[in-house]
Length: 459
Image 1: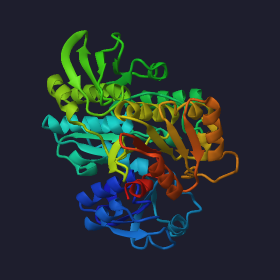
Image 2: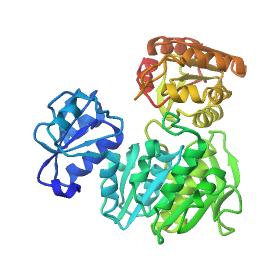
Image 3: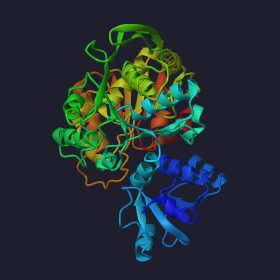
Image 4: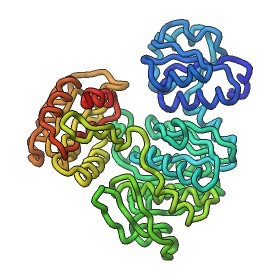
């Protein structure tokens, strides 16, 4: 079953408002397909699809697939879903989102999969910025909206496709890029993966799928990535901070705004200084990976290193929102893993003139429970922490973990001035606004619905 077989038929997406699903739907619309779909809530993404000609239903109800010859869904849609049940009863073919993405990628000379537990969206965004800035017109399927692309997805004219390759539920094993970026391998998604060994094994399988003439771009400083990379049968290019890597950063300078400058080395030759305009040392790794991938695509190394400076962030990635009535800066970040929370708060601490007030929405019960100890030590760079209720996402609350437990763990760790649990966004916003002063930063953190609080803070 291939998407080209449905060119003159209707394709229906269950969950069309998701960042990836909406992008795939947009690609089909751009190629002249008839597209419909549904999502739980209306959003800027569903409105955009409607403006492009898609028929979008709000709410997932039985029978909304009427007229469709093919249905696209994500792994998060269970067989108990009312709308999917109707599709299955009607015996309409169903394709997983990841399979459609793979079919798109297969049509390009260069298909680049950006994977890793942290930094996929930032690295993909940096790579897109470099390629466009150096005169290329790639097709990009990103995990966040990017101004230079006019959204999260861009359909280009060059024979290059760049997409995030998500490891959750081994989704990336359904992809077959000929260039793979591995940013890092860490413990996460423990509702699916049994342990770190299981995660490394999955990455090894993904890497082993690379063709002999493919290229692996790997973080040479990350031992888990190097372990998984043993499964390769192709060329490997490494990046990192150590001089043993093919490409490496040296002479790193942490600027007052939290961003970094560094010298780029390739095969021990200095290619000059790079100025990053997104905060945090972790972004040095993302920049290096993006530069290497752009060179693989044919860009000149000097152009690549200059253009990465033009990346100023994607939506929900340490994004400046505005200021509240007390003139405190408000930022938002998508961080939902302890390593990401640490990096985000360190960036906030470097940028804030006074206190950092963090409002955190834990993402999924399994992650919060499995990484509770790590989370308890992730907020050291904050002065005041507010924890709201856990965002369930795809999970059911079994009563095994609560946001109060995280509050207690952070208090026990003893590195934060104050920490409290406030269940609602309204309470959290009111509290943060009350204690904030000019020069403070309020940072809202999480991958769920936490961004809804931003408007409350700015009132």
